[in-house]
Length: 303
Image (cartoon, rainbow, N blue to C red; front, side, top):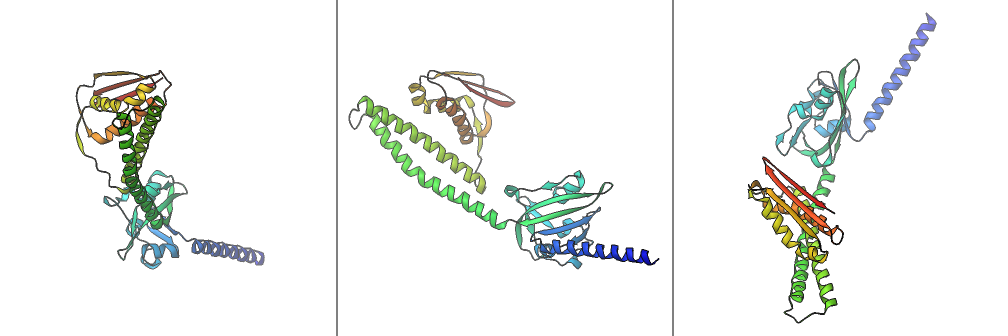
């Protein structure tokens, strides 16, 4: 009996040591850690979690996790079925949110913070619980917004000098300021075309920043894709002629308009056809086929 008591005492000491180490580990983690049982009710949370949600442990244990961790996105409160921990426990697989779609955790005092959430099920003869780790990324989201705003401002500022360069290059090429030698024409054309590429890149940067900031507006209207394609080809007439590119178009199945944003469609075709022209070989061919039959199918091939 004495040996048995000694063994039990030793095992109890080891167990208490393990519990103490686990508690120290949880206390030392700066991110919020919340554990739930098989029913999704909170069983444990660390000090960081108490601070994160704005509630003490005694006010959270036994409550549904979605009641303790209240999430919102741009559409309002996140449905229970879309809570990361609920997804993890339903699928039996880990689930992690990303920075670009980081939800807001609404604390019980009304304040909020953008968070990244890593959720994982506890698997013991099936899903017996779950654990989620919540990381505050409010500062990262703010920095990401500042980055997008900077790109937007810088893009706007770049458009003015680029437009001026385009105007001067056109004036030189038009001959209104005097005839140019063959070499001067060659350089003026190169300046004009490279400037046009720069304007395309700036417009692309501006579009990306508007998407990131949520300010990109989509205005749908009837758009005939063949007309947009022809407009892009007209814009690219210079490099097409210079590189002796042969253009083949097939619009036979593009007789009805689609409902789309004309500017966005223009950007799409400008990128596809522009790449096919600029990265083609001299004397090559660009083939454009557009078909509209319930869906729009655009094919751009180069040599």
